[in-house]
Length: 159
Length: 159
DNA sequence: TCTCCTTCGGGACTCCGACGCGCATCTTGA
DNA sequence: TCAAGATGCGCGTCGGAGTCCCGAAGGAGA
Image 1 (cartoon, rainbow over the protein chains, first blue to last red):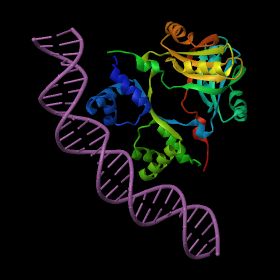
Image 2 (cartoon, helix red, strand yellow; image 1 turned 90 degrees about the horizontal axis):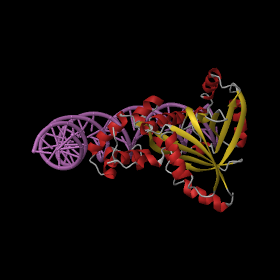
Image 3 (tube, helix red, strand yellow; image 1 turned 60 degrees about the vertical axis):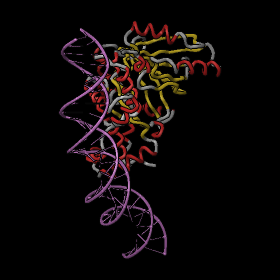
Image 4 (cartoon, rainbow over the protein chains, first blue to last red; image 1 turned 180 degrees about the vertical axis):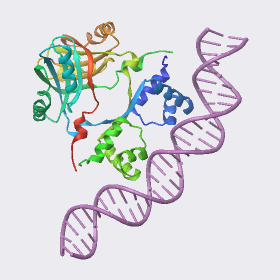
């Protein structure tokens, strides 16, 4: 299935206003509400839209500190990876975890209230992860870009 | 303002179903639709809920490759930082960018279709960034955790 | 202990708009 | 040129959202 620019406009708008009504969206895009409803349903059915979710302001919860954590394991055996991954999924402060190529095995993104809080997380969550050989943390001083969707998705000029 | 566990339940649910109606949510939480509407509006007004947004399945758009890019600048002068940041914001394939402590100045998360596509991005987007001294890329082989909100937010037991 | 007051929840009601359907029309692509 | 698919309009139904009011619970003060 190919998306034309109206589909992309719908996606772009829903990325901002997930609760927009059909009529509201239709006016912005330049379609009737009927046509828009059909397109939106198709986008959902075809899996382009995974879910509609509320974006929370994490700063309101005091989570203002982002930490990048590099982790190397003692062993790269399948069993070690599985054990590590099963546990890291349970860490409540971890929001992203990637298995990486290169020297570092895993990279985690951790959210903390402040540096002291990260010390607690390091102690209670990270240091308890199995098979870890080395943990190296870097603090984010500022966030310059934070997008859920790269803008390149909306700029593909088809039709 | 303090949130009780019903507020957290509302937030947790809206994080999954941003389009749930008041009655639908009220039934899940165990509230009347009136009480729920009041709470939800308060959460929006107080800024806990920033927006409602559609989550796109980026794999459907062919963006299956995540790359972590470390960038060091030639100089850490205020002018160099500003110039770099102004340009990196325009890069359409960059979804995250952090100013970091430590040896690396910036860390970027870039989404690409595949490795060949990343080569193109490297050439057309990254290498054109100003004042860059060194670029180092690591590929994510697999994504183990990807959460918009750390689970710790919903587990704070108050009231 | 009693009472007042504030706060929160719940029920009933109304109104408005969203949603979905059918059909005629138009556009697009083969 | 023709056919298939997409569009737009009109319509009716349904459900959501918002308002008002009342009652219950909890806290403060005398």
